[in-house]
View 1: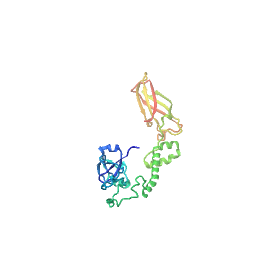
View 2: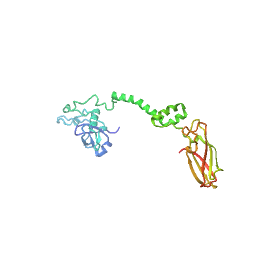
View 3: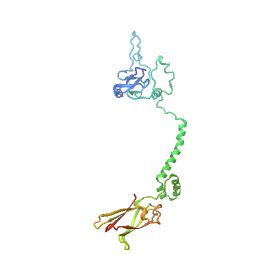
View 4: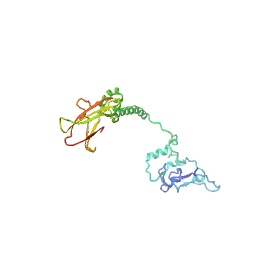
Length: 288
């Protein structure tokens, strides 16, 4: 165990147990946790070892010289470096909750209002006010409701897709919250079963795009965008165009409900390519 050191506040005679590291800060200048006095902790180092009194000599005025004093030591946490700002009320509470300063006969009046039952109970848990406990109890259900509501809002599309029986409830909730229940987007579950691009024999420069989009999922999926790329004989891009569902789905398709589970969407689109010459094409599905 390291050699213990003690320093004493010259203002209120409070004795503190200190460490060399603490005294090294700010050149040893510290705040007293009892009277807020700033002093040099190195200059005020003392020893608590009793000194024998030689008979015939006058009684020493310093109780430390006369023998081991009856003191209650404060630990090093009660000292702060001199540059720190400390709230007065916090220090008063710390002084009442921490260990006590040494008592002498002339200090009785100054310590008459000290709560001796609580001054050594700084680490004892404090009971919470009853109103605060009731606030916690009432707040837990509210937080749970908010958490459930947030989960329903963020995962409403997935819930409606995987559990269709929840869709009517989710639609009603979204009607009041200003949101909408939409089909899921899963590009990996969509595929182009077949596609063809032919020139329209009745109209020069007009191309007819035909394709079938297959939904392989067990729930409805949102219509994707189509990316049509026309290429030349060297497979270089001539022109590229993105087609939203509103352009290729047709007037009878309900884009809002998506492509039905294990269903398909037929694409038939006329494209004006009179300003270009092409030898091939590529067709991709994507969600923006």
